[in-house]
Image (tube, rainbow, N blue to C red):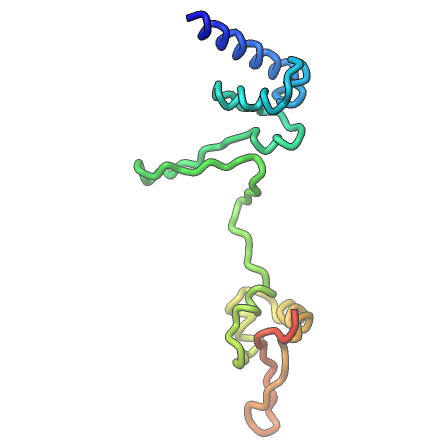
Length: 153
């Protein structure tokens, strides 16, 4: 029983130190005169999270559960503070799309630009950067600008 009382006191001291230091664990450990590794070990033991932004452990700070409203069985995911988030899915870069093209085949630049949702000039600029644009003679005296798998990175 006495041992449980000591742990409860220690947990209270740690929580108060975190409050005084704005949730920054490293500062709270210094405030208590405790090695940071021991301090963070105790945080894990007591289930306490350092919520301040300081030191290399700042990424531990915020956990935001993401829940799926359509499924009761899906556990959701935990997004740690060091993850990037965006309001919409980031677009795939034009350069990476060029590297997905099959080797040895050319695609008309206007059709590729329309399919990828980019401007012709944008596609042409990126394709020239990696040597992935050329002209192919479709019929005599009719040359078509095409994009191909890049020749260099």
